[in-house]
Amino acid sequence: MIESFLEFEFLRNTFYTGLLIGLIAPLLGTFIVVRRLSLIADGLSHVTLSGIAFGLFLEKKIALLAISPYYTGIGFSIIGAIIIEYLRSVYQSFQEIAIPIILSVGVGLSVIFISLADGFNTDLYAYLFGSVAAVSQQDLYFIFGISLFIVAAVIIFYKELFAVSFDEEYAQVSGIHAKWIHFLFILLTALAISASIRIVGVLLVSALMTLPVASSIRMAKSFKQAIFYSILFGELSVISGLISGYYFEIPPGGTIVVALALILGIVLLLKSRK
Image 1 (cartoon, rainbow, N blue to C red):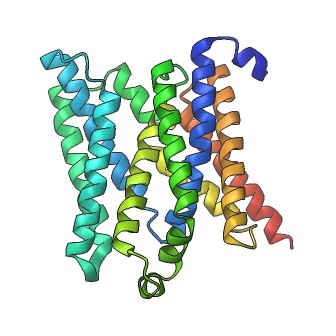
Image 2 (tube, rainbow, N blue to C red; image 1 turned 120 degrees about the vertical axis):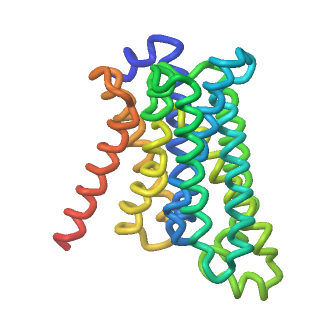
């Protein structure tokens, strides 16, 4: 079944991109869940949607065809990440309020730009729920570069990310620059969300960062095991979701999320019997 799925170049691009996001989204999702920042993926994905809508508006009204909505979405996601970190420093006693602020602004800007771009169209639908035909070879190379950067950053700064995630005060006493690590982490999250949009879509990307982790933490006996299981479940769901989405001619974002939910259900059932 996989051989016939990989028969066409655009499907190979989608498959390889899926494998990359099946790696980076759960990898960062493990840190997100431990830090109790699960809603940050929703906040940044809605900001990304406003960037995509802005790009569609530029394409349609100003005819700036050189600027892809995908790349304007990435730009907005990075700006949103910077603003979230700034708001977290301003509201130090109420840091969680930064996410709903960004989420609300993202939704508001999305509505405005979608309206200015004359409403919903096929391109926007693909960005919302993903598509098996949306990944070009240029996108694949770009997402490969993002994935390489994220994996390298996590490996290099693993101890700092681990320390800040579990005990920020101890990390600061140990000499770790927590503010810089926070900024690096949220920047990596924004890049991972941007990379995942082509496959799972803006509205479903947070599921790929949280559901594999929800399954893994029920099985893992250590943080590294949780990362391993999260990536394993992420890859299984992406592969099965892409193939089933292609053969049933439905957006892969939905099938990937259903696959993640099935894995979670199986894990919970198995653990309840012990």
